Every structure is written in structure tokens, then in C-alpha cells.
Image 1 (spheres, rainbow, N blue to C red):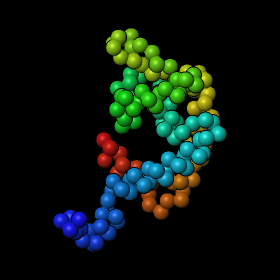
Image 2: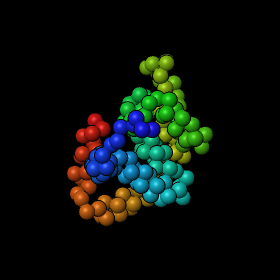
Image 3: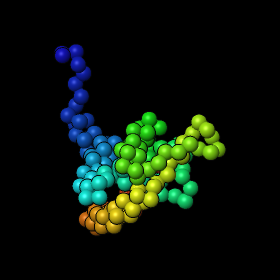
Image 4: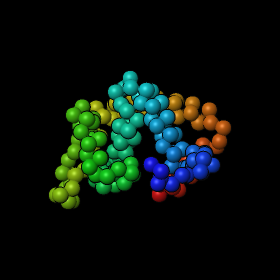
Length: 148
């Protein structure tokens, strides 16, 4: 233990107060808890809501672009799709253009579930933005810039 380098307390405080990663993680967890609670009556988590929104397109998207949009690897996306598929909200279909690939389709039942969740999302999203002291659009642009 005595050979362990001592990090000055001022450095610890600086990291605590300035680390973008730490504060993004804390904010993400806080937002996830709020949206999970709000979406629970329709049987969705915030992650499932975001995933189903990503599938709500005129043509079923391939897995790759969906994984990229959600910043997931394909294995994580596959795991996230399983409960949605089991509930009949999402279908995973062969890609007619690439037999090795899969396309992801929101089913009619999935679209109904998602439609019932959208007003909940709108209300909570508005409530969160209204309660912020900082301009939400500036924060959003910064997060988009970092995640691009």
C-alpha cells in the first residue's frame, strides 16, 4: 500500500466536479430511472422505447444502422430485441438483399404499444426540460456532438 501513488485531493475534487463522463453517466442513470418509471404502465423501459422508436420506419431497417443509432454493438442489440420479439412487438426477418443480415420490423401490436407510450414520453420530456436551468437545446447539441 505504501508504494501506491497519492493523488492530491484537489485532483479528486477537480475530476468530481469537471468530468464530462461522470456527469453524463449520472444524468443518464437519473433520466433512465424517470423514464422507466413513467413507461412502466405500458410495459416498456426507456431502452425499449428508444429501440422501438428506431424501428418505427416505413421500411424495416437492417440491424447495423439501428445498432449504430443506439450506440450498441450487435450482440447487445440482439439481447435487447429478445423480450420485444417474445411479446410480439418486434419481428426479426431475413434481409431480402443480404441473406446473412436481418431486418427489424415493428409489428402492429408493437406500434400500438409504442403509440400509447409516446404521450407519456412527451409529457415527461417536457417536464424535465421545463425544470432545467440550462438551455436543453444547447445540452442536446453538446451530447450529439460528443456521440457523433
